[in-house]
Length: 391
Image 1 (cartoon, rainbow, N blue to C red):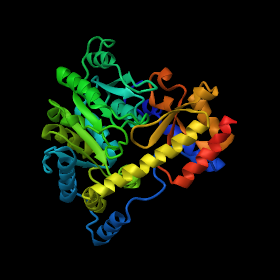
Image 2 (cartoon, rainbow, N blue to C red):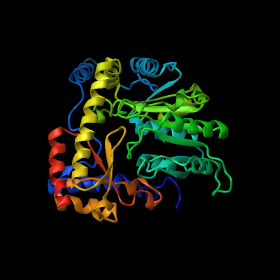
Image 3 (cartoon, rainbow, N blue to C red):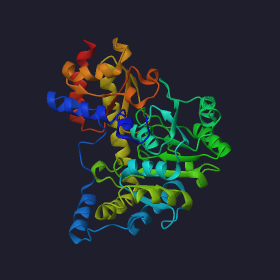
Image 4 (spheres, rainbow, N blue to C red):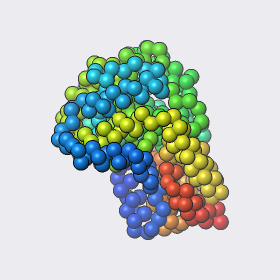
């Protein structure tokens, strides 16, 4: 089947989200399937956005992003990670992190190139690789620890099963969706060594960078040999509970960021000028704010995980992000997708099967993802409904 066609893309996981959302609406189920908060972000930031919309201009923003946001992104990188980023040549504002990853793949990959990613993987990675006409190679993250085998990573990069054709790029997501894994410094050093050895470009999706509960978030770009070969992608959506704004950014060396900009101009050209002003202010919020959102979400993680465990589900407590993964084999289920399709009618809760994020069906066959970026009363209601599974 040719790459880039609608038929080729139809198999990606987005369809399951539509199916689960429809199920929630039809049955009145608690929707823990999608990773969107049910509370809006800081009022002060939304007020800045409202004022910017009224004041204008509301025309095209600069293609690279507003100067205010590019400067704020550079300041954020320096403040949190000690990275020196030139706001004029090393920052590209995008319509969310999803566009950032897609533009990086389209800008850097030629048809026939290979891209390595870990699985389960966020479904847009597979679609972006396909649209670039590239070959996807996956390295499994297996329960319970969701670590990876360095030898398997090296084999995928070298193309041991693909005629020895070395990959062009690697996509890394930490904290990881859907598993909640925060890769350790030692693991990231393994990844960096492979990238340097084989001259790979690393595309790092770090949208959950401020939501690492256990362990330290280490940007791959800060490790030796990686600054010159890494594109770091992030956004305002997850950190500030403003997922509908779709304001993201990509940072990296000028040549790689130029490639992203070249692809991005033919995707959306530019977007959300007034919202970019507000996000710039959000990035400058004090340390207490960032600690507060992390601690609040950690408490909600613990609340949901306690409910999942009480329901008899083997629960892999996430180290970061928005999602907890369970193994439904612990209650006698053999197919996570079938379990999710029946769960709304069975006890009034919606989750998403991890198998839709996998190439190898055995990696996620009995795993299910639930979102905890919800109000405490919603989590408690979901937990009460799921408790019927244990009875």
